[in-house]
Image (cartoon, rainbow, N blue to C red; front, side, top):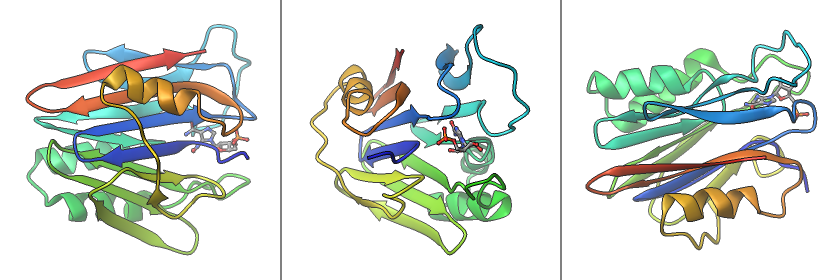
Length: 189
Ligand SMILES: NC(=O)c1ncn([C@@H]2O[C@H](COP(=O)(O)O)[C@@H](O)[C@H]2O)c1NC=O
């Protein structure tokens, strides 16, 4: 099954995977704790505005994950003290689903040591849920948050678990744990 990009979050842990049929030549780069998805040097040129973005940002003791440019305003709202639910909902609603050939939903996760939120904005809905157990949301097919059997304890295990999941067309993945410190890990093709 092809589900496109997907996020898994639970209190203290999260992961994000880029799966892509159309733009496989991409990798995640760590820039001082911010993880950025972008084209590799061998990638064909494109004017698609949705394939390069920060997929993980740290705000104090919290992490924001997502599949596009909404990660930045969510992080900035949290940094200014917005309640988590409101910051996620406002940023998703402001940017809305992607205006591409698929009306691709925006998906987002927020992970703290004791709490986690997952959200999406699609053509037909804006959803923001607080979750207590591992929960997945994807851009296609699995586009409503659902339970996920997540057997990871470290950032590296989280990244590897989503990268090697059976969903088709893996490209790269990130994992994160949030405790007294924040640890991140990346798997690239
Ligand atoms: N975030 C991403 O990494 C990303 N990669 C591709 N997209 C969008 O999704 C469309 C479909 O891509 P694909 O066939 O690779 O699933 C692309 O034309 C692009 O508009 C993305 N946008 C949202 O997921």
